[in-house]
Every structure is written in structure tokens, then in C-alpha cells.
View 1 (cartoon, rainbow, N blue to C red):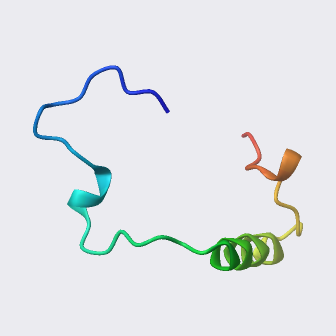
View 2 (cartoon, rainbow, N blue to C red):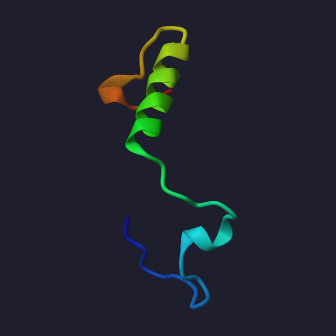
Length: 53
């Protein structure tokens, strides 16, 4: 991501969240697996991404 301009007061996205902790690889993999499993067609879409619509 490239940000060409930002306000002086903006220092980080995480400053706006109470909990902006890292997400582990295992948690991401589990969430993606659950998303794929819970889809009616069982697919995540082309190239593993969301399907266009």
C-alpha cells in the first residue's frame, strides 16, 4: 500500500483500536478454512480469492 498523503496527527492505524494485536498464521489458516467450508459450494473462489459479482 502506498499513501501519498496523510494528516500530521495520523501516526498508525493501530492507534484507533483497543486491541490491534497480531493475528497468527494458524488463526488466519483456520479462518480461511472455515470460510471455505461454510460456503454453499465449498469454494473460496478463483485463485483462493473472493468471487467477483
